[in-house]
Length: 322
Image (cartoon, rainbow, N blue to C red; front, side, top):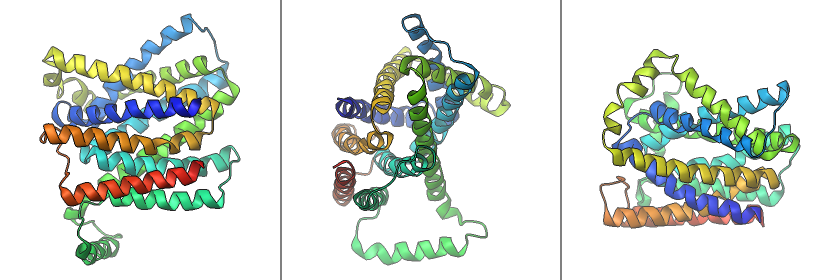
């Protein structure tokens, strides 16, 4: 049952990520501001306590608030990566790494181990994610790629060449987002093992709300949130679109957390493979009708490459959960 719930949640998330990419590219040009606007709605989860009242003790409260703060930090890195590149590149990269980091953290803190088949699945996942993330598709370009890698490695102790910095920032933000996502889900799994689902979920959401309040203490961030983004909300339809996306995202987020509370955290994370298929189809449909909306590169070679990479990721996930 929890697997079907997770798959449906990832279907919703695929659409949410495309909408987030559109908002970050066309309306809100700051990951800090976007994370703030997303996190501020966490306060409304407190309404669930009226139906399922629960009060944690001090230790439980600290863990719940820490999880919420960790999730808000994750959002900042996630939106930075999503703003820097195509949704069909960022989502598979982060999604392929989250199960790996989840297993590492689960092994350290929850005692879970990897089987031989899962290790093979992880390798396939990484290869598929890398294939999706690379823009060049022609085989003869491999020498050019190797040369560039050597130049980067050669300058690793010095200043990174300017032409490599965008890719470097994308990789750093994507990996950071994957690590924090994995840490959040593993921590929430631990919390769900010792606390009731609704109560702990609500208190962790309050942790994210506390985090967005703390963001206002940083003058530069406060400027990004209230001054630089004022024009983004001039049209009512922009706000209505954002609210609709957030409602869908909240529903998917609750379903994923519920699935994690019932099942294996790494398996639920690994099911993101179906999300890549949903994302691929959504982007394909939107890009054909509105080619300038998402700025996705979907030429013949790129399209084939992303399809092969997606199939590899799905193969890895199949091996992982079978």
